[in-house]
Amino acid sequence: MSHLSDSPNRAPADEPPRGRARAESVPRQAERCERGLHKGQQTRAAILEAALSLAGQMGIEGLSIGVLAEVTGMSKSGVFAHFGSREELQISVIREYHARFDEEVFRPALREPRGLPRLRALFERWVSRVAAELDAGGCIYISGAVEFDDRPGPVRDALAEMVLTWHAALNRAIRLSIDCGHLLPSTDPMQMLFEIHGLILALHHDARFLRTPGAVERARAAFERVVAFHASEAVQEAVAQATAVSRA
Image (cartoon, rainbow, N blue to C red; front, side, top):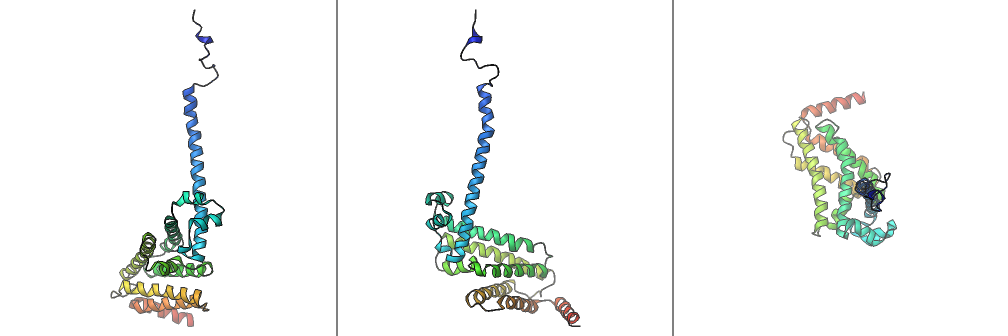
């Protein structure tokens, strides 16, 4: 007579088979893994936030694994685990700065109509961001260029790539302004871009270094002079009519 029901290797009737128990543990493992990844992303974001603040005060060159560990209260190995090297940390800060610049300056301006309205929005948001950064260390694009202008390497390449990406966006906005008939067909997009970028550099220098009052307003006024120089006759007439109405 068989005694299988009394076998110690048989699971009780109310106990799930071992295979099912293992299968049911997979979602829990995935959930724990997801929580771990989320926590890791939060930690990395917190490190980048501290690094961005330090970069404004000390420059990109002043960033290091040791400095970030001290500021964030983490171990050096903990910071190293998220970036791997000082160089990767610096590049990550540049990319994060560019991502925020993109979100605050470029993307909102795209909601404006093509042509001068969009070009104006790009410049105005650029000026507003630079003005907001004056007391927080200044624009990393500008300060970073001073630090790495004659220092070849991956950090300089990353910084130059971000600046050139922004230049390309401004260049497209200028070309669209020409296509829309807002700027003269003879307008040289690269020349106008050079002039606009020069206004931002002058603003950063006068407002941050010289502490010159009214630098932001002067930058805005200078931008309108640049636009007026390149504007089509239709735009010039519209501006003249608007000016006459405002003075009436």
